[in-house]
Image (tube, rainbow, N blue to C red; front, side, top):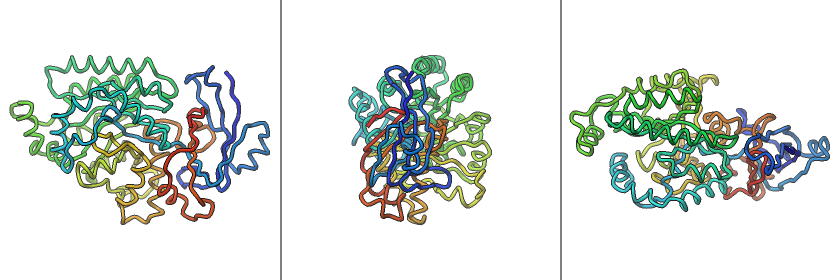
Length: 431
């Protein structure tokens, strides 16, 4: 295997560490692999980060490039995306989670038919928007081949869903087939994982079997959790929309929830890289359980607005537990086109700037960029999201006019970036 060294620099380099350090005229020395020889069996790493001119003097034999009016940062992370629903445009109903779910049940088959082109377009959208790492939630496995062959770094969550106790054996057999097929493709850029759809849609016995596989394979875990008030009412009181959903839509006599909020969370105790998506209606006690167990939150602001008319309160990390070691790790996702206009992470970041008017703009911009880099990689268990020695050589360059003269680099980056100008994933130039 051939490993060469390259240096890439830009007018501004966002390290995306905890302090959000920004280097002026900075650079990154990284390993560049001969892809023809190594494929995805080897990892390319960052070797050094610092002043661009100093790096070029210290490593004179390294290939080099510098982007004036460019911002260099780790590739972005879309920590929660459903590629399989990329066909959707106007099929589903927005404004209330229950009405949306009813419309999904009614029109799901139409949206899922012939998705090859739409999945390819969604993958292309990730790369063009600077995303190098995705947490892909796959309900059926229809997107597996396209994602494993793509240039993306993928944590591939095989999702389990099903509430009929008489069908558990069949459901679990299907789930295992998808999971172990994904295990055959495992490499440095394609990492199999496990997802429980939600506490309202998954029988607790089925969930137990699925989590046993996750523990055996030591995979990350994902679940939708407390996304709607309907779900909260169902788990707390066994009433409301989901009572009618199971009784009338599926004909279940006297339906009851499979979990309490606490019992659902307790399933994951002792497991690493647990991602709970949405968490819009988690109260202080629930958040405390999540903190104690180092669970991660993934927020999808546009989806949350469309389905539930609210956003995750980012103050959960400042009001009760301000100490750094007790903060919840919050990552960013687009969700799928089933509940969004597109899956462009840059549009999600821009939208987020306007969704939290009570947070000072420059502070919020920094938080958003960290959520879309280091926090997402941390949640997914990937050594990326930060430009630091030993981290993955996954980087992106955006061009921003006159960024050299700005004193609000993070804010201006979110406001103005349109598409990646240079993309490097695992030491390989993608764009």
